[in-house]
Image 1 (tube, rainbow, N blue to C red):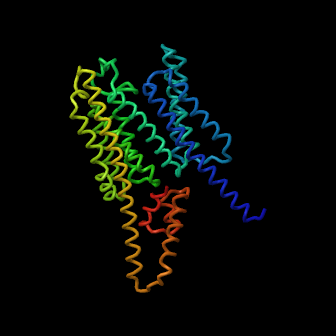
Image 2 (cartoon, rainbow, N blue to C red):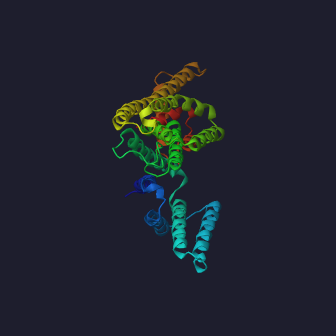
Image 3 (tube, one colour):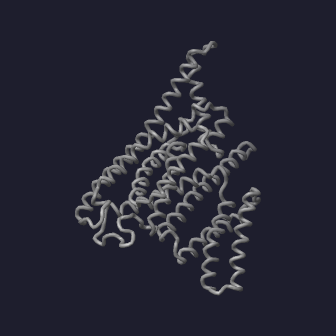
Length: 372
C-alpha cells in the first residue's frame, strides 16, 4: 500500500470515528433525557440509579479509550466544584440525623456529576449541534406524547390536582411547560440555523407540537421564559436581523395552532363531556398536523428562495465583471463552489468555520443547508 493510499484510509477512518461519535452523543442524550422525562421527570429516587449508570459508563469508556484528554480550565473547575459538593454530601453521612435521606441526596447529586463528567470527556465543540439535535428530538417526542394525552382523552378523566392543566408524563405542569420551552427554542434554532434540510424541516414541524403542548400547560412562567429566551437569542446572534426574519416566517404556524386550541372549550374547560372533548381533540390534532407540515414547507421554500437568490447574485456578478469570463468557464466556477460547499457541509468544524477555511462566500450557506 502506497503512502498516499494509507493517508486516505487514515483520514477515512478518522471521519468514520467522528461520525460515529457525534451520532452516539446525540442518541445517548436523547435516550437519557427522553426516558428520564417519561419517568415523571426523574423526580423520584427510583430513577436516579439507572440514570447515573449509563452516564458513568460513558465517562469511564472515554477515560479508557482516549489516548489524551484535554479539558478547559473552566471545565476542570466546574467538575472539581461538583465533585467537592458530592464529597461533602457523602461526608455528611457521619453526622446526619436522617441517613436514608442523605443517601438519596448523594445518589441524586451523582447523576449530575456523572452527566457533567460524561459531557466533558465525550463531547467536543463540533458535536454540539448534534447534541442539540438529540436533546430537541427527545423534548419533541415527549411533548408529542403529552399533547396526545390531551387531544385523545381517555375515559379516566383528568387529575384532580392538575385540573385542566397538561402535566403528563413529567407530572407537574410548570415543569412540562419549561421543558417544552427548552425544546421550542432548540427546535427554532435548528430550523433557522441548521445545516441539514430534512432536519430543518422536522425541527420546524416540532415547534408547532411544542408550542401547543406549552399552551395546554397554562404555565405563565413558561411563557415568560420563552420570551426571555427569544430576546436572548436575538441579542447574542450577530445576524439578528436574519434571525428575526426567519422567526417571523416560522411563528405564524405555532401561533395558529395555539389559536385553534384556545377556541376549544371542551379541551380547555373543566368537567366537559368526554365525547365532546374527544371530537374537539381529533379536530385540533388534524389542524396541528397540517400546521406542522406547513411550517416544514415554509422552511423548505425559504431555503430554496435563498438558494435562487444566491445563484442570481453569482450570475449578476459574473456578467457585470470588468474582466468577463468565457461562457464555458462560468459553470466550472459554480461547480467548484458547489464542491467546496459540499466539503464545508462534511467538515468536522461546522459550516461557518469550514466556509471560512475553504474560502467559500457566505452566500453559499444555502447550498450547505440543502444537503440531502
